[in-house]
Image (tube, rainbow, N blue to C red; front, top):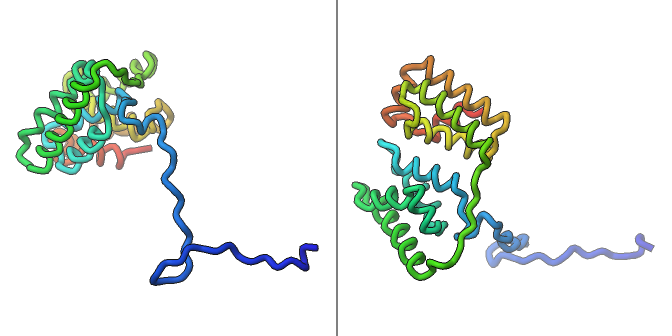
Length: 210
C-alpha cells in the first residue's frame, strides 16, 4: 500500500526574510553540577589558584570570576579554601572590569549567605587515593620549577592538568604531567617564562597536553 500513499514533508518554521528553517530546540535540562549550590571543591581550589597567581592575565581572572559568580559556596568552603579572601583581594585590582566583577561575586555570596545560613550545600570532593597521586605530581612539578614543595605555581599547573583531563587521573593526566616535568626541567627559557607569568598556565598545559 505504501506506493499509493503520498507523503508530504513536515512543515518547517519560516524566517521572515528567508527560506524554511528548522526550529531550534529548547535548552537542555540542567545537570546537578550546573546548580548554584552544588560546589565541586576542586573547581573552587583551581579558581583560587588562578586568582592568586602573580602576573595572571586579565582574561583568566575574568573567566575565573565569571565561573565563581555561577556558584554559591557554603560559608565553610569559603572560609577553609580562602576563596573569599582571593575574591575580596581583587576588589581593588587596577583593572576596573576585574575589580567590578570581583565586587559582584563577593556581594552575591555575602547577601546569599546572610539570608540562607541554614541551607546546606552539596560538596564534591576527591578521594584519598586521587589526592595522594596528585600530591606526588605537584611535588615533581615543584622540583622541575626549582621551587620548594607546596609552591602555588606548581599547584596551579597540576590543577589545570587535572581540569583539562576531565577531572580524572587517567592516561592523559599522567602523560601530560610527565611531559610538563621533562619540559620544565630541560627548557630553562620556558621555565622562566612560566615563572614570571609571560606564559600563562592554561596555555602551558594546553600545548603539552597528551
